[in-house]
Length: 473
Image 1 (cartoon, helix red, strand yellow):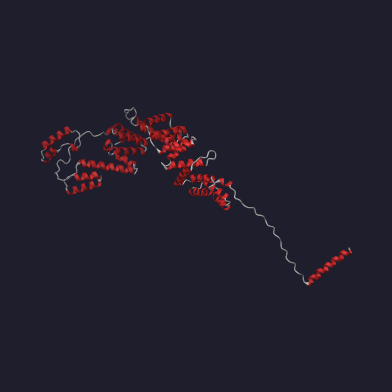
Image 2 (cartoon, helix red, strand yellow):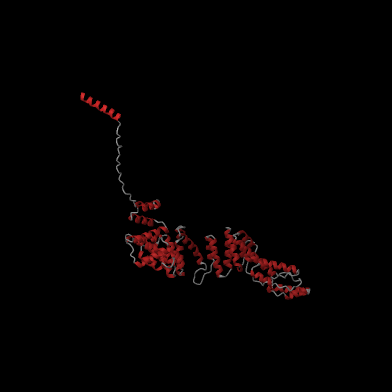
């Protein structure tokens, strides 16, 4: 059977089931071999129930075996055990046969379970094959099997048949929750055009909105999320889509969607629009992420004091808000043009948060502040702690500055050797090397050796000879 034609071939059963037909008289005539009355009863029941078929076990010898234990096992979901118990009973009682109802329901349950297992294993082809052979499972009462079959088709890139099955559910089944879930599931699997077609099949609600309007905006939400993260072009959304979604958000008072608008505009650096939507979200419900958005947009709008005030009030709500508070105070403490004015109480709170978060940025900002206040020992401790948490330029330069002021030139040299290649600012810190003067070395003359007599006489003769030449001249 082709799933594409399920909507034409399957409907909810409207006839009496086998168990609803009173077969008492029929079985009595069969057991007493009263064939004339048996024929008349068959014709009567067939007239009352045109789709009813006579049971195959009419002439079987009746047994006193109850099927209830088998039904109890069936209800527990242990279908293998049902088969085992049935085989055991038949071996012990050759004339006994399970009812057709039990056999039919057991076969469907086994197929349903196999489909679910195949779906979990992402064996899409097996799911589709089982569904094609079991049209009884493609009805509104078997919603989950239809969902996993439609997903298997979509995952197999058979979007036409997947759409047909989703459409069959939306146009046939009545449960509003299941209908909405169907379109939501389809929106994650079908191309956008298919989702829009399903949305158009929704009923019109009493307030004039469409039954599946919320799903239609899922497409917009996904695009906005991608754009907010920088993973999609802003042109992926039209102004009409944004305006329709904006109207829906304000009409439905959806805080999550208002927050989404805030991050959407934040990602495009449209600070005013972003601030507007974040504030709207906080008015709809208290959300730490919306508060975070308000603080960040205030900071980008250069409203430092307002941002800090809100961060101060909200810092304890989440670690993220505490981190933003630390960033704001750090920027204020190191601002040379407009330094932040803080009292001892806030500085103490700030330091507590810095150590809770192990913030290298906060520790070095506090260290520079202490250094400005001539608290060298405290500044040294904080710079060291900052570098231990994370070696950043501010912390490393702070350590080098303190070492330089203490004339610990070996320490300065060690810092530059370790971090010089990473932080260019260390080049401005010079290592002092004292001048060394070269001492003049005096040559020591060897004491004259006293010549022996022969040498002295020879030297004397030469001196006398030289003197005589000078006199003649």
